[in-house]
Image 1 (spheres, rainbow, N blue to C red):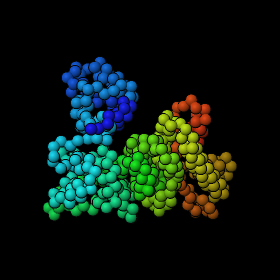
Image 2 (cartoon, rainbow, N blue to C red):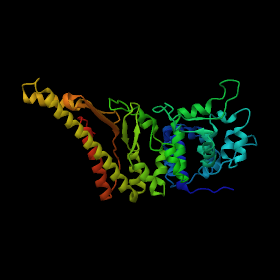
Image 3 (cartoon, one colour):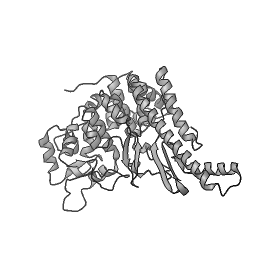
Image 4 (tube, rainbow, N blue to C red):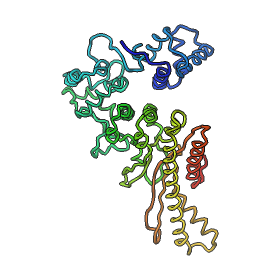
Length: 414
């Protein structure tokens, strides 16, 4: 027997699944209409969109007639859907990636890992690995067991040279001697950072906070590729994981919010130490303001502190280069106005803001004869929160105001 979750929880669960598989609700509704044998036209799709919207908000429940269609479209059992992933039943007695990922027994895991055919290293007929299913079923015990016994790792905390592309994820499970047949799970671990961030989300839900540093929970690989020199793209958005953001916001332990709102330092590919904050802190703030406003104040203030520190550091560097340029160029310009104009241009020419306006970088030459190299690279935080709470509204305005000031150092405007 399994427990049916309430309408709101089922709605939230369905929303994640639909977004993950179909991207937009309208695409899902079109497939629903087709599978239900209804006329595939704009009017019918619109009607289903309205009904689905109420289900996702928890205002209406999933109807019995919906269950087989939802199950087919989302590739899951009715039990899994109604329990929000907490219960699922495999079909038949055949041992599969699916059944092992649901198992809570270490004996089952060991037997599967040690099979001669190495099924654990491969996708099944549905294109999913044991890790996919374990993350989907939130089987943290299995995933933690695989990590603790060094069967898999999402982050190689040694110096792998992979930083900037991935964190050196892999497996110690040996492939068969027949060649490169068994390669899927290692490749998946290396190429899909979402697996790592899903594991972070599960660690938070299971209050395994020691896992956060091990998984580099606040980082994304592309941060290591950023330098003081021009950065056109940040690639930040492609690493966004809404499940992780939800886990942070929903955590009952305040230390989680503290951890993700504190700045941290990494050493980039040039060997420079760079300070960042969680790249999706703005999204966390937006969700806190909407869902947990009592927790939002301290996080916004930390965002303000980071933006303000960035603005001050940039302003200091720009002014320092400007003053040095005035001295360096004084013999080349007879007109004071032209001297200042040229020196100001030189001091801001090397301030760069990525196209998505999330990363700012600067480098300049200062000191005697302009020979000392200075610079920084960091992320900046902006929130889109709408609130009637006077304090939070004022703090969001302050946060975004400093963000705009940083962009305007180069002449950008939001």
